[in-house]
Length: 329
Image (cartoon, rainbow, N blue to C red; front, side, top):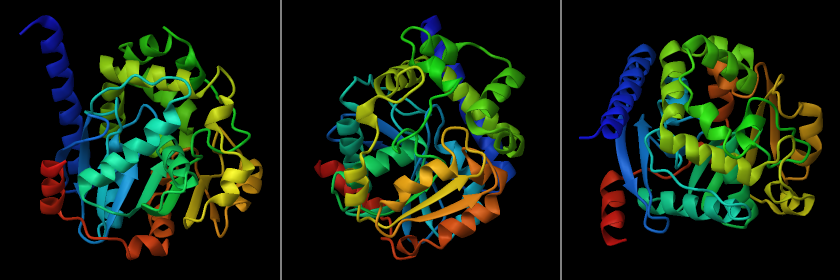
């Protein structure tokens, strides 16, 4: 085994150690499995918790499925299926290209649901995950039966401003270097606070911060995130093709709930509201916190999520059916 392979293996072990500490601190019995995606040819990891109607969770940029763990025990009556998006956590990497990210997001979600054996399912999305899901429902697919977007859905809504540290990641050659740099825990925590909000990061468990820090340093993850940020954003503003138009927002029929922090650094409630009001029947809840408000007040966020009626009537997840579908893919 060469030095590079040993280093990668050591980093993965450290990520798993941090996650195990996180699961133990949360009192969460978490299962891990991998999906082989037929259309995109990617292998992605899923963290699973609870029993009941299935719900798919999609995290934000430069995060991982582990960021949802604080919610796991608060939503134990759902089968939560938290996916490591490509180039995040322990999933396969991908190189994003300008003008192709929306198409990739639609195929990726279809691929994930096919591999899980779910014809339709509610989705909870944070930031990038919320944007991917909004793009998907705006394209007319009915496979997302209901959507909870928690935290501003990346740059899907008009008016978002790209801020440091995310703006640094849009610069070719700089983004991957920033992510891979071996920053001390306190430096990473400060950077994360600028990206998510100080209240959210102060409340986040230490093992979660460590799992996210180590995951971002995986070379393949750093390259994926840097390519993604350059593909969807300019230095200060989103690329126009990333933002949903008023017509696209008005055409969304999927039941949609937005849970936005009062101090979200990317888009204020006042500026988000007109776009959300274009979506028929959409609900908007303002909660204390920043871009990841469930970290600041997990119980309140869980209660709002659980009120989304489409979650309680969702399908049950069958691992055996998922395995058969993957075998036949």
